[in-house]
Image 1: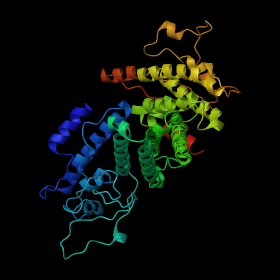
Image 2 (image 1 turned 180 degrees about the horizontal axis):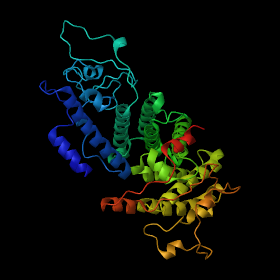
Image 3 (image 1 turned 135 degrees about the vertical axis):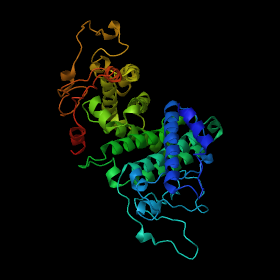
Image 4 (image 1 turned 90 degrees about the vertical axis):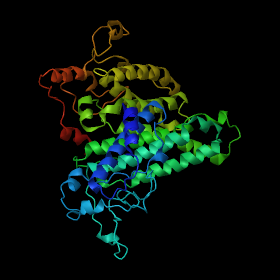
Length: 445
């Protein structure tokens, strides 16, 4: 479906800047937003599957979306009624470059990715444009979130193109190191330019944009992992005479990859609660994010934690946390079920490499879920009773510690059964899990 949408958009020319003077600017902006929504989905799927995109970024000249709510430029009747509509006016000659991670957005002229605008509308030659100080400040909104998301997806596309294409095998390792360093700096600049309300690295009491913060946080740490993943290996086996400086760069990249995986897992509470997580996070690719982080952490374990020898306990705890979340999600998610089975088995085999042992409870299903057979539900010791939520609400002195967060008091039935009931005309099931406000209390501490 994503490929069909991309081809239809290309056929309509949505990927190109529209310079039609007879078309109102708000209509142009809607077209740009449709294109960037389609391109973002396509790039996300390509990162998840490792396959190339169905379009080339260089063929895209559509400006990045304006960081404004659509209502702000759809309600105006005249082009000069609101500041938002005035900011929609673009030049047709000076801003024709591709917006791929540019320092100044063609659509909104956001200088250095800040939240203040310096619009460049089309003025007659004898009338100078307004001063930079007169540009209005942009309030946090979903449009601003969409802008930063689109920029990060552009960076993802660049990473895949420069590090994960077949022709990269002909590049020298020094060239790869240079590319990794350059891409990592771009990612750090993107994160440092985020508005405070979207900053996922700090605890905030304001929960109005919690979902946006969580989404940006997961996407950013995912990007950092794929940027630094080439360094997470035993490079000295292939390049025995590598210089000391190059070795330090390799170690720094590998450590950045591991820390990004750990930071992604740290975005979630210690007590698994998929119901609450689905309310405030990108539920559609959480299995991918958790499995991506667990894979990086377990890969470092397979290398006997050579890049972070003092973090063995933290590696195990973070990996167990990711597996525990997959285990809890596996009760009603087929993809999570497969991911949990695979990750728990691999973790059980890799934990001894760092002189640790996996918590045995992670290998047991919480309850009968999709694609579960009686053989799957059999305990290793022959006991057929299944652990429940209470087994994970108590702090343990050994193994996994889920913290002191309140235990989940109610468990959702299979989600697809609720949805089917709704499609058949019934009432949708009301979640008894914590509200977004209650979930947000975790991030206030």
